Image 1 (cartoon, rainbow, N blue to C red):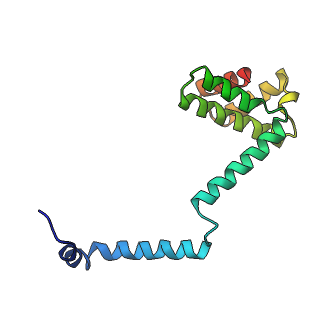
Image 2 (cartoon, rainbow, N blue to C red):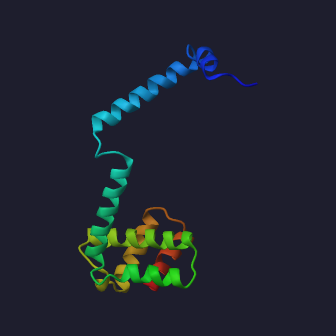
Image 3 (spheres, one colour):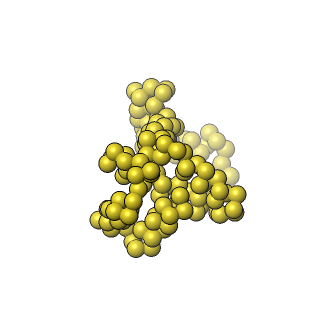
Amino acid sequence: MTFLRGEYQRRMGTGADRGCRERVAEREGQVAARGRDEGPVAARAERELERQRIARAADPQGRAPDFLRRLEVSGVSRATRRSYSSDLDQLFAWLAERGSTVDDLDRRTVRAFAAELGRRGYAPATTARKLSTLRGL
């Protein structure tokens, strides 16, 4: 059954649609209060800049981008590359917290990272993938 727009608005305007209009007005007010520069896109860009800053601090030689490019050229799926990238970001953040870099990695540091992953509750398979990513780097 097809309704003309005006008829639909007349039928729905007094009931459920009122709540929807109020929510939209509230969201518009929140967006106006935040300003144009803020919002999901700006927040995502800010997180990306922070991620890059941490990566530069923990990986001064820039090995991670080369590693991810090698994976792409060798035909590794996009989902796997995204997981590996996330694993490296997590490692870099962990290293940055400790004031270390990838150049400082040794057996003891890798074991400490693996122990931290275990404390955070990661499954053994996930921990193994994260350590595999580290080995590939």
